[in-house]
Image 1 (cartoon, rainbow, N blue to C red):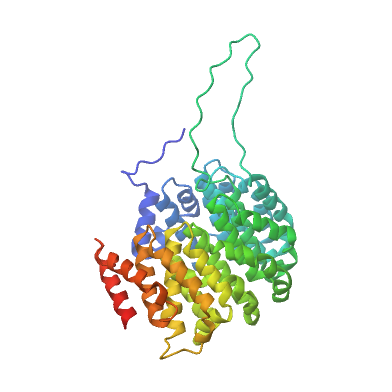
Image 2 (image 1 turned 45 degrees about the vertical axis):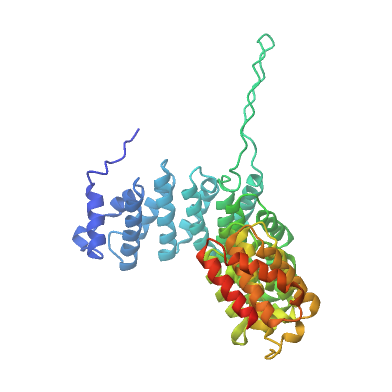
Length: 473
């Protein structure tokens, strides 16, 4: 078998690429030839492949004479048909660049003929590179590409959706003695993290075709498509769920506004709601991207969906994962506008309180902490005080305040100290905002606060004292 080049002795090609990278382009006399660039795209070193791809892009964009369309297309197709996965990945990347630069129909057709085989390649990086080719082809040929390739992609998604056990149980011969019983297999903890063959990459290919077709894809967003997205959003594998929500984001973006409001939004709003509550931060982020696209498409009709989404969207502003938190904060600013979110929260108060109370009882301590932060904001920033009421104070009825207080009291006894910390501060705001409603539990709160001020964690002691100070005014 072919031995990889030693990393201790750089090849002439690597030296050329390194010289071009450090010089910002390289002189035409020292530029590698197309054959050398494609050899770099098939190199076993990732850095060499990346530099070769950048060299190819630069050569195409600057119109270097050696990089003629026929030569680049020929080398791309040869690489795609090679045995090494590095060559196939590099060939697909080069093919996408060639389609963008020269846009020749015969070449696109030749590429699409190879797609069914490459979609199920054993190497993840090859399968992922197919998406870029499908995206560029759909941008030019639209639904014709999806109608030819969509059924293949959808069939692969459905086939790989349920992973079968690959166990070869052999039947013993009649004359042989029975084999001793095998020991029980240890429990498996991998299904939520390990790959499921080509399922996630086929989801990515579907998303790429939607993006490439744009608004013309709307007629293909039918019940079967939405049901497939729903199944994938419930999949045990977090990567598949993540791709499902990125796929839903593409559905929302390309869908016609009237079709979205009449059919797509009512059928997907609960899926999005479930996604922004997922325990995996990556899935929660993907669904946060989807919910922003959902709200942008709904435009002036987005208030029709506030009762389902507003509470969970508000919670993610305090989620522990920074990417989710910052993205959700920006989405909140976009949705609420310069007037802020208080008016929206109280307009849908019962559903918002339901979301906060449910989150305060969640198994994930980070979600419980976020819930306490949101409830704290209601008392500290929305309700005001008896002496200085806000316009929204009348919405804080006795039953609503009691529900929030009960959730905070339970959180004040939580096993996670960050949850107790935030709940303590929130209760201090509630005592100040609702002195009459909290009178019955004042002695219980004082006992908990004094216990907190004796804790061995300095921030807990400090915040406990601040909560008492806020409560007594």
